[in-house]
Image 1 (cartoon, helix red, strand yellow):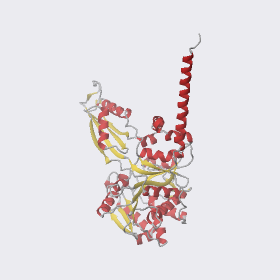
Image 2 (cartoon, rainbow, N blue to C red):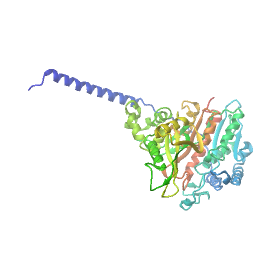
Image 3 (cartoon, rainbow, N blue to C red):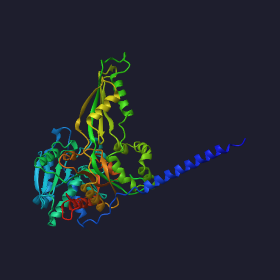
Image 4 (cartoon, rainbow, N blue to C red):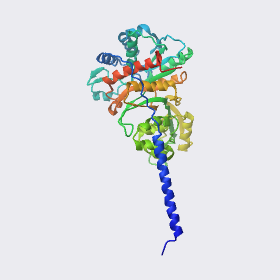
Length: 504
């Protein structure tokens, strides 16, 4: 039987039409990819400075020997360790202590003021903190070198606080000392804000310093604190490291779910015990995570990273209108990238029952939430209440701190651009991009006095180095420490001296 000519013609037209649509789609995808511009910079060379790397490394190592520990229990704090550490700073940086005005805030925190020659310019604040976290007793034998010995060996500076964050404190002081030795005076006033309790929330340290500056009417042009480090193997299709500038910090909230039941003998159990009811609620929360967001800081981050990717990966991000569901599925499959795209929840503690044959009268679970930009404490509570759908479960706020997400910094600001340029000057091999700080710092207290609070670590950290933060064998590369000193020197030059990048 012969096919009707009209049917054959129609089929041919459909095939041709689909082919034309496919060709047009490919053209659109390729065009968008080609037009996806790089946001990286090629600034002029940095100022040339020289110093004895062995000497400055030894100086930092000496600072790691002071056990300036923060504890959840305030009575465990040893003020004398901090006082001894501060005397060491005075000995090691005599020029800075002769020129800068030093104030002790909150009994143990330090605020240094380096007065600029032009009082009309808004000041710069460089933050750090002097406290470190304790060592887990069971891990002491796992350290290659004792955690408070301050050892320089194998090309590294070993010890608690080398990365977090006495390294940045000493690098900043080295830069300042060097500038003073050259007879330099900044145009812009510079504050060095060194809190003593960042590891437990910073309420007695940088919170009080920020409050004092607010009372004095200080409105910084820029605040720089610890933040995102330089990491490797993060950008598909390139071997370049990624240097992230934190433009916001996720919020922090702990909620405790509590179930109360009648109890009794385990030989006559109800359908669900208090623990069973609690576990059902926890399972509902884990099975119903917060929605993914690809707006705001999340999109800004990939707008900087994606143009440096291989062509196939770049095509996906250049055409989010088509590939966003695929990208979301891939990114949310990994805990680090999942944390960048949504408010996360983690069940960290659970408690219930007193004896194996006694029905529990009470069971509780504590859940830690890290809130993305746009989330609120109330919206998290509402999500939990709606998800568990059980009015008999009590929901209470707990935890040692509670904070909403910080405001998102503008990547078009002079402050961000100056920071990006400075990183490119010192780390020219890195891709620089805005990022999201998923951890917590005490820089949150400065968002009330400055629109520009940027979070960056000048540390090149590989997987084994990241494990040392709050962990075993914390260490900092000697060579990288030299780069950090150059970074802070150049940052101060760019932000506070003549010819500055940073304009009002």
